[in-house]
Image: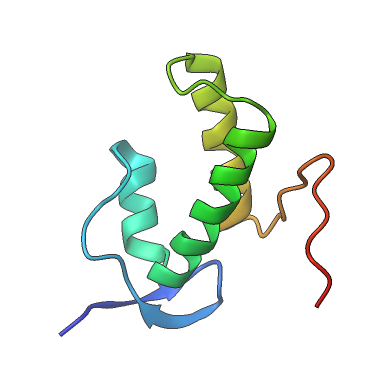
Length: 90
């Protein structure tokens, strides 16, 4: 049976992550209060950020920037603005 969490991003009970995907205290916070669905949404944004801003994950400053964006997206409800990106018309 899958575990459920009250997802801070979705503001509702939802299936939680199967294991801690991010290290440290922040990883624990994500594991305990972010759902699989919210994490999936973050991963899509993260890929776009890495690609559009040409981030190098070997660079500590780039990793710190990405972590700040992740916290803002998952816990503060801030949408990530990506310069030049226009979502496809529905």
